[in-house]
Length: 212
Length: 212
DNA sequence: ATATTTCTTGCACAGCGTGCAAAATTCAGC
DNA sequence: GCTGAATTTTGCACGCTGTGCAAGAAATAT
Image (cartoon, rainbow over all chains, first blue to last red; front, side, top):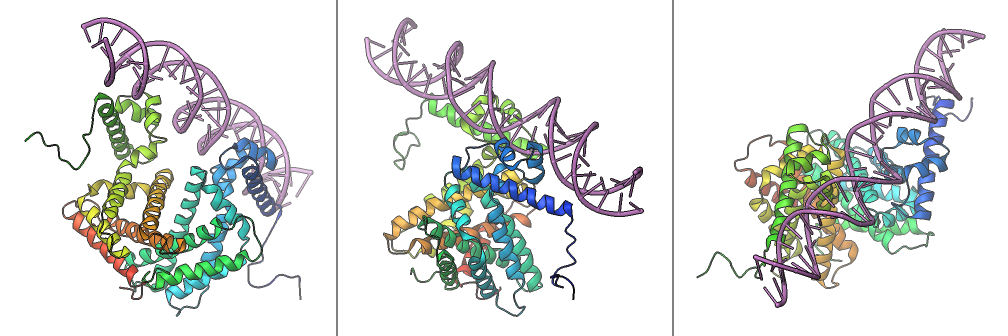
């Protein structure tokens, strides 16, 4: 018996190189978030982020394409987790069920407070909003590909993209609704989000027949 | 009997001022589109647009916030038309029916070739894609507001935003699908788009129960 | 220890977006 | 028409963005 290394992942050769990059990335994203909180969404420069992260301006751009992208790390990781959660669903399961389960599970796990913050920030910052929309769009593309591959040509491209787009729209609506009337209570917020996710997706499954 | 002036619009006091602004806007948007066609999506500068439109760089920014926004005039007008078409629907009509009808009607009328072009361009230009996503997002917000107002509190905010988001996702999927395998035939393209719109929205109404 | 690969940094440069004030254009009243 | 007010265009300046490049620093391999 060796260390705590499990067979789930490859040996994970985490040398100085890898670790430093991870740390730097974290530092930059953290600096961006801190600045966004204190000065407001679009009211700070890349130089300020870099300075606070203890890194050169040029290095910042080695990690992110823009200040907003750095801010959106959290959103990106949420979607990342949702995707991987979905792709680990049993093969036979109906699509909608799998997606609902994946999104609900993700809504439980994640550090949700930050997401609410970002959603609210995006309302006052076009650039941030665009970056978020773009993140969702890329996630959508990946999910479409995954589903297509999963169905092995059993459905038309239009069906798949309409379905995935609708599901993500419902998820977005749930987060939006949750972020809106959730000013500062962070307690059982996870439950509240999960609940809304399931609710919105149930509406979708009903074809929005009944205005609940 | 006078000129072709109909009672549909107010007197329309269209002086030199208004007309010049309209012309300038058109010229700029046209110049942007021409450049995008010849040099590719993100491969030209604002100065070039301004020059081709016969206008100063500064004036360009009086009309648009970015090159991509100028490119997206067409997308914006499509959504504008869809919204106004929707808002002119009979009051009692079920929501989904009204939306399907509005979108299908808009898909008939519009100058569709350009939209396909823009969709395809966006695939290779992140900035253009973001601008388009933003345009759809703003349209979504407006529609949500319209629907909310229309239902007079008869439905929860979550229901409304999930529904509208899903409907627009289906419309987007239809346009995507249409733009994808429609390289250059412009003939009955309108019919093809309309057909896909109705198809996608029918799937939505079915709750995506059957992978057609 | 040294060679090699990888990451960081500074520099330069073209381009973006905006405030500002001086022309230029349009409009209103006479 | 002429003249003054309102509106639009334009040039200029300024700080910020994003990227290529090459030199330097740090981690890794031999």
